[in-house]
Image 1 (cartoon, helix red, strand yellow):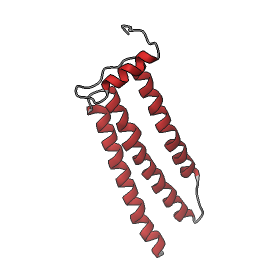
Image 2 (cartoon, helix red, strand yellow):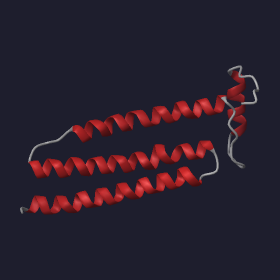
Image 3 (tube, one colour):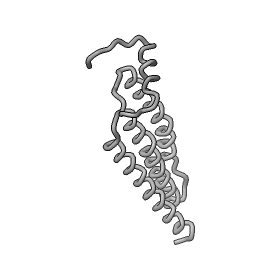
Image 4 (cartoon, one colour):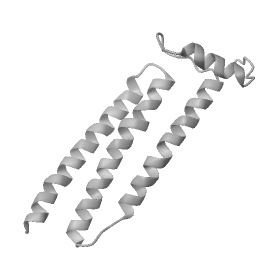
Length: 126
């Protein structure tokens, strides 16, 4: 086994452990945070970084093992990093317009209320 393969094993292990820890924090935040808006940050931030590290570890592992560049994981990572913020923005915007309750002590709650009113959203009991 050459030195590159030995060092890449340590690098891949570090990426997988780091990715698993980020995903654990993201899933814990999704379960434990108090309201929709704070829960939205957990999977879009921590879990996205966790998946990115895991996919990067996979890219390095298969590229070293087969001695050729594998870009499948890179394409998946790019797609993930482009779509996660957009989908989080759209879900947050929809939650504001549907007047989802915010946790006590949330800053700028009045701003969100004014934004929902500017769009002409009627009060509904959904």
